[in-house]
Amino acid sequence: MTIEQRAQSFLSVLRHCQLLGMTVEQADENGLVIKLPYSDLIIGNPVTGVVHGGAITTLMDTCCGISTVCYLDEFEICPTLDLRIDYMHPAEPGAPIFGFAECYRVTPTVIFTRGVAYQQSREEPLAHVVGTFMRMGKGTIDSQQVPAASGGTA
Amino acid sequence: MNEHIEQLVRDAHESGDYMPLIAEIPYARMLGIRVMRLGEEMIFHLPIKADNIGNPMLPALHGGVLAGFMEQAAMLHLMTSMHSQTFPKIIDFSVDYLRAGLSRDTYATCQVWRQGRRVGNVAITAWQTRSEEPVATARAHFKLD
Image (tube, one colour):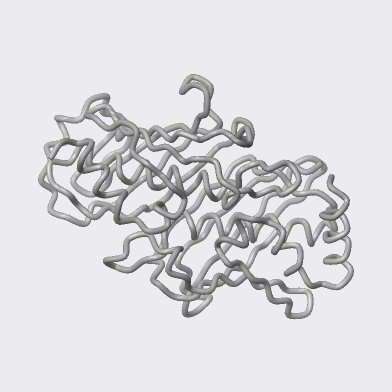
């Protein structure tokens, strides 16, 4: 299976993500892009039609979590330890939101991920995100393989 | 702000019943968020619902759903404590997942640690079985108008 196929099969089993209509747009060794279409379900402000932060959190938790398949040779269950989102500006109502995530450090115990949520361009993020994930499976990956190694060790 | 929503906010502050307001927030309605008032305390309730599941194998509540529930709880709590007429805008949100959020009813309470003129800081605790054993804690900053 290619990285993109693995990402797609991961996303396809997540029921809440299916409800929101999320799809894998791109997945390779550099990271993952997931699309969240605009819909009435995810409106947080009924006056302005602006998407609820929770829907963006869901997009980014999913995106950061699935980005682990870009770096791990075999599927592992990686629950979220923590996630932080900083909002640069509200999403434009009516347009889809994209999430991009990459793993910037993989250790035998944890995986550090970061990403952005954006609409027009990845260069103009709606939100910046960092998330840490726990590795529950066997620590098989050689952390030296991961580019741009930085951050803490665990 | 839309007059209908404005009226719902005023009614909610007056009666202490926030369910009609929650019913007008599509995202909160989709998750199925409820709120209970115990005196001045507010306890937010997320009844279990198949559509809120992430991984059906475990089965577990989607981490994003739990976070969205906590963010919505914080926003409503802040509106209530400030008697605010408008929805506070989220600035940042940080969540720690402490235990697996199983396929069970989830509850949340909030604490406003700081309410300045422009920014409010809210801490949120979510639990399923006992409040002393949270499944997640979070904190959020909101911009106040």
